[in-house]
Image (cartoon, rainbow, N blue to C red; front, side, top):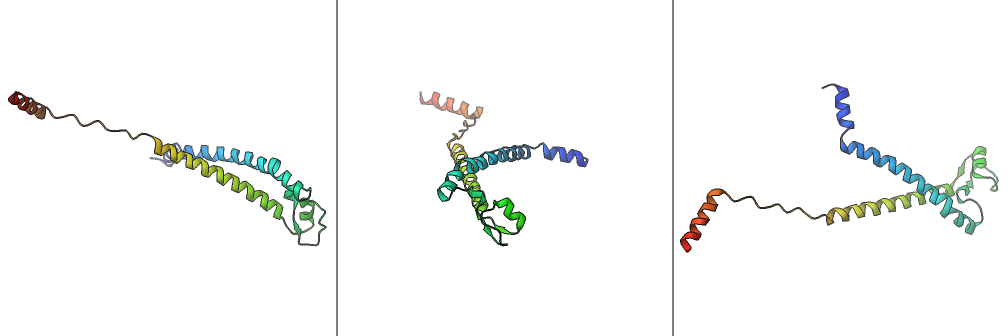
Length: 139
């Protein structure tokens, strides 16, 4: 078997295809959570803290003015961008919680599936004949 055929067999296995679909859906879902955090959750938090975009909070390490945006401050030297870090950390926590809930629901669904009870094996013909003889003798 050639290497290309082996690769084709590997790539077309159900697990590999399922993994690829999971990665694609996960990437799309990650964008939704990013938007949720950056566009819905963080603006009210930034307003409560001081009115700036929370992702722009940083500590200047190279003498930059604190009034600059994060992008401008990075151009002038090193900064400790703790606001951006906290935003990304919140993204991770939300994603991890949602994935945990999904796995939990899948595990419950697997446990709830009824276990198929196998029908008893058919009784052998000689045993059936012996039972008929027994029943006839009882009568």
